[in-house]
Length: 452
Image (cartoon, rainbow, N blue to C red; front, side, top):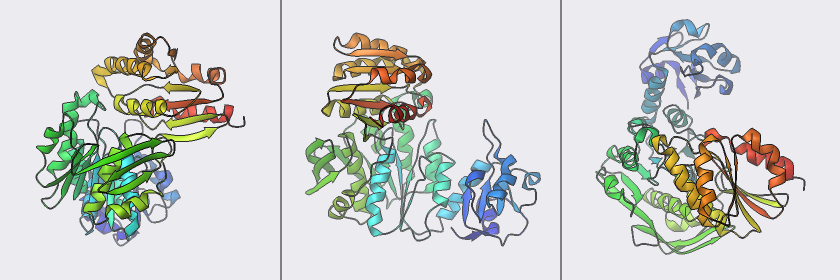
């Protein structure tokens, strides 16, 4: 990014204060991450008011700030706006419209980040790609990711998340993607979206905003495919596992090193675990082909794909093998993780499961259903951690006579017992929602067993 403060004020529709000719090279909403040339954006949140961190941003290198009142600027020049988040969205949207490159918007209940990373890996065979920063997929993260794009990027891939009605539409209006992908429709974020149908309508709003010359990519055979299709006013590509569709997988093999399959007559080998990740790959391959990179080049690129830690990432820790799937959890992704666990050989299959958040009134029912299913899947030991997993552990305990179940109300109660519970030769799945902080379990396993 290379522009002026004055141009940023125009894009953000704010009031310029000070020298508009100052060069802006990046935008940040975190005063600690500002660099020389940054525009710091003060965001008012439930716990902190970013407008109070302008001075700290200046010490980190920020050259200007965007705030809700001039008094917050101190000695820095800047832009005054009524709403920092809305202004950040306008800034990113207008900046995006100066760039004549295709953008891909990706949403879905599961698989957003994996699909994003697979697609970016393929697209990089043609040059630099703009891509979402880490897990930045909301009304702050999406604009920041757009604004952080490399100057020489030839395409952009942006992940879009939601937890309430209207959020995907807002993000799509900011991004204006030419390609839209819905990876899956499931039981994530039911607290405000209420039902899978509500999830489908929310995710499908991405398709409503695609241009006529764009393309919508989504699963071929789900209960919600017709709901998604109703939103499509442009080209479409459908993907499926082992069923005829626009793109589908054949000759599927799952091994500890990943998955192998054939699509469009080309053999693929990707170091990702789980059949569900083949669906993610199919969506990415279809999008890449639409953007001009054929299946042969995609297959070659994906042999070099690097697994993202926290997403079915297998690591050997001492005499244990750990499947780190701690990034997030909902009933569908939990079922996929358990399938991966049980399909790999081990002396004992162990699942350490934290709470699944944002399930609303369905939380107790879905935790209970997931526990019963896990017990029947062939897991030898289930460890449930957190108050919301009481029903999960009860259902698991009654779901199979051979499956052992232990319950701990908190991580603090469980972690000191970890060394007594796990044994050499165990294959351990660790999973939970972000709020459950299950990455602490992986860290503890590394500390306890790492030198064994």
